[in-house]
Image (cartoon, rainbow, N blue to C red; front, side, top):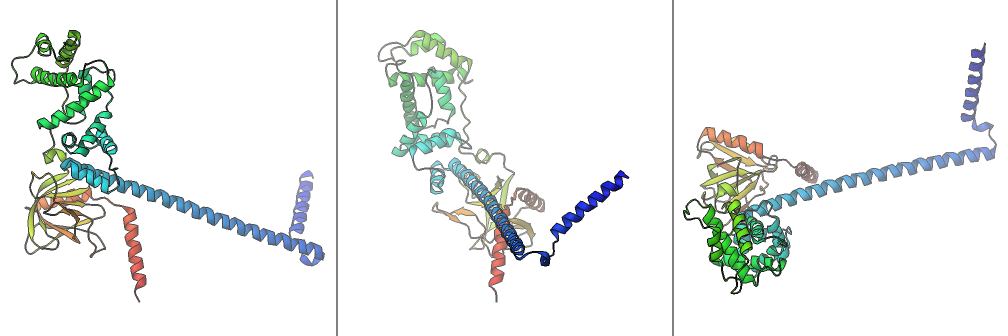
Length: 413
């Protein structure tokens, strides 16, 4: 039958292929044997080349992955330092700027610092105003660079003032305000030539507008000025001449309809500097070198534990980053309700932290553990729970610790 014939043909083909594949070397001529040996050798060489390529690809892939993770770790570390610098700036602007410059996060130029203040990410606007108002020559250069970043072209004076006064909070000192408003007036006239006869005119009218804003919108001011009164108050300020009445009336109506938005004065209050903390309160802390107990005000926020000597302090006495730490309850014969922060599996390793000395120097901490005592058992449990939730992990740190441990064990005889 046809199926049988097809089967016979298939079997014949298979047998032919097998006979070709499994030729017995003794049946070959010397030339054919040599050629076969050459083919086998080239095949082996190709297999070895392929394996080498695979190994190289795997090595390059591994390097790329390591490079990516290294860059990611660098970025994470940089972001943490920037966040620390912002906090320091909010507590003491000059120390914050110095910290950022020393850690190569900010260039020591008035332009770069001005850009940092202008962006204002995470910065306290009262602290920005204090820094810009300083009479130090470098701070004045930063102030002018900061004002240069504002674009006032084709804005009326009220619109420009709204933009300017929202980027920081005016300090309380008259001399600081004078320097800042003088810089504003120069920039406005530069952006809008011909609107005023001189920067003095712009300066005086800017103050008049700020005073008008207070008079119209402060509930304690009973005598509200009219538009006519505002116009009358500003006669003769344009180098002896009068400004157009329509200009003054428009400025008056703008302020009457919408007051200035002034940033909140939050520069000296820790509840604002460390806004919405995870937890805060008084605790006792055991010293590092000198084992004495001291009462400190603790604030837990942003995966860090800060402690202060007083609640009114602008700068913490110490900062304990919680990354890769552990916490546990401990019994202490001298104090009740104790718990400890420590590095797991590394008993003698100093915890990465910093503290402020009495002379203002910031130095590394020397604690291999932090022992803390809470006023009550309930507060101890609440602190432990809150700190546990705030502790973060860096897998690279654990890998490094494991590698160090392995290297240490290999050195032993």
